[in-house]
Image (cartoon, one colour):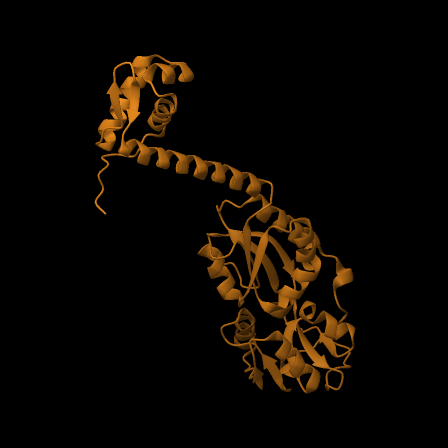
Length: 319
């Protein structure tokens, strides 16, 4: 479609047009606008020049008769007003947290706690807010936040050289060796060394996961190779492997139910890289966040147990 307008439509002049259309004359429109008739006449003339068409037939004593073009402009005016009213209503609902979408990017290991400790309360308080939880691995979480594909991220990935990422909270979540009751290391009374751990079948997450980055750092420092017997991106599969026959590397927090039920035992690993692992709550630096997103962030930092350091939620770890 060829553009025929030389410039953006001036909404103030459209207001003068509507006053003339409604009142039927320049003088009546001027009275309704509390201005001089010459001002109204001038604004209508400018608008007609901008649109390149006549909007009214000037009839002496009979007032202003709208042309067919005026009826089209009237439809535009009404649609514009309706859209403005809708915009104002939507912005009000957004400020009042009665509408909106929030996307959270998180690896699987945090989602159950997020649902139980935070989102259940949030849904009850703000039922009209749509929360979307994307289950992805930690490096992808950082990318999703950086590219504005998610509003909130939970990640274990180190935030080195990430100027666009703002870390709002961090928590120490050491990586533990999780084993079943029948595992040879299940009843030792000391911290497990990396060499001891490497002697037994081990389930690990894929190389693209941040946990494997930690494993590779340990391998380089200890000059040892940790070869997995089983690899899976699903934490449930890793834990099941540990219950049945071997061990896996996860934080004890990720296996609360299995540890509390006695299916798994969490053992501390005697290595600073595993012991100093952290989880981060992140957003993009400088991104304007809605009131509902800020409220959810407050709830996460207050109620998610590993951020508020409520140790009563943590399973027992054998040290």
